[in-house]
Length: 141
Image: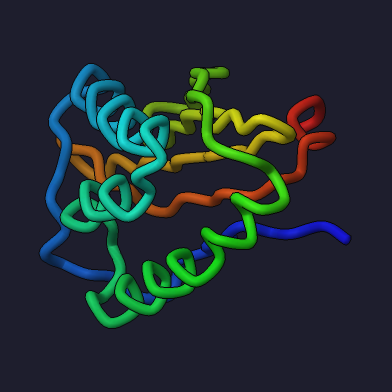
């Protein structure tokens, strides 16, 4: 049985107040900060760092955060403790889309974290992110 940690696809709801990141260096620093919290086993804190940059309403964010909180004990039981994170790659499509991929390393498995950024004008916003345990897709996605 495959446990899916959290899958988010957030394209329908837009929050006009989402904070923006000015450069790719800002994006890299931001994702490193989020994943540093994840590496410490503090996923809720990592999510809180993302909140200002996501283009979703607060109510959707709160539901997602609560869902994650409820899944954490099952993940720990199945995968073990978090033992770190690892940067995998950064990909750009044109001048307006950027994807950054990390893995969260557990004692027995990994989680794949994908962050998608969109640059509508001069700044970047976190359009969406996904996290799942589909190890095999690390080689085709």
